[in-house]
Image (spheres, rainbow, N blue to C red):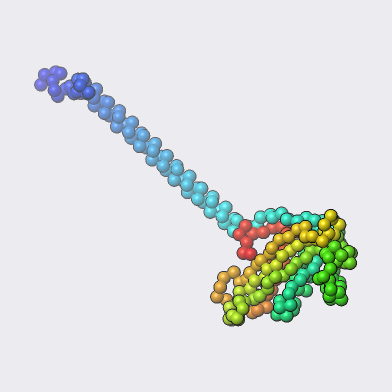
Length: 248
């Protein structure tokens, strides 16, 4: 075979290229491809490792939230340094079916606010209930007059609009609901007869259906329902801790 013949020279885009030069170029191109492919695989591996790490960290954060609490600030701070009374009102149907709910809510909310809301003074629950009982016409009086008669600067007025342990006509399954409105009268303010703060509160228990008297008693349902309502009504007035994912 002659030197420079077809076996020793190749064409590249119309030009003759020595065979050894062409082979070297091909080897260099293959090496570059392998390096590039390795880099891509390494990048993918690092990316996948990063995704795994991120997933682990995210799972740990989610687990932390599910088992921990967060700070929730008060929505109303107007009880700080003031005297107050708590009044809970409910219609006759609620009081007839659940005669103890009004005094229990009054006492628990009253004590919770006294312990945490920074008030300067309060009227004990027994005194408030006795005064309201001896003055049945109190509902027809202006709130400013009522506060003056009680001798306080604030009235925390809670109207319980719904309270039941089961759906009407179904005593075989618990479906407790407690709902109402929490309002505040500022007797020393420019509008003593108007609500200066107002929030709706609604809680329920059990959290799912299918529970009846064979699973828990009515007293147990009422106890949890009242505790939840007291929490939601009282938490409006002071900073507190709540679960990241509260049940109520």
